[in-house]
Length: 84
Image (cartoon, rainbow, N blue to C red; front, side, top):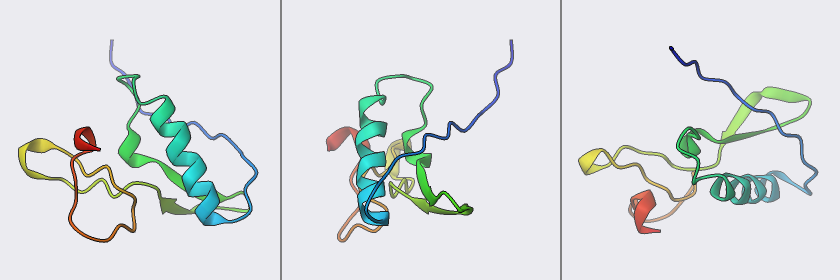
């Protein structure tokens, strides 16, 4: 049986974009144990501008096929998700 990708929209209340991103990181990390959740693709958008998405995680491809798990706007070098 072939599987497809879907996006789950979960509206939340937050004071600003930075707070919404932190909330999204917490939610994503809480469900990160599920093998079918693509944590790196987590985005946040305003309810009235859902076509403008803001990345939550850097998700850059690193050596060995790992992905960076730091925030999208991090300073310094990327760090593999499993070393955070």
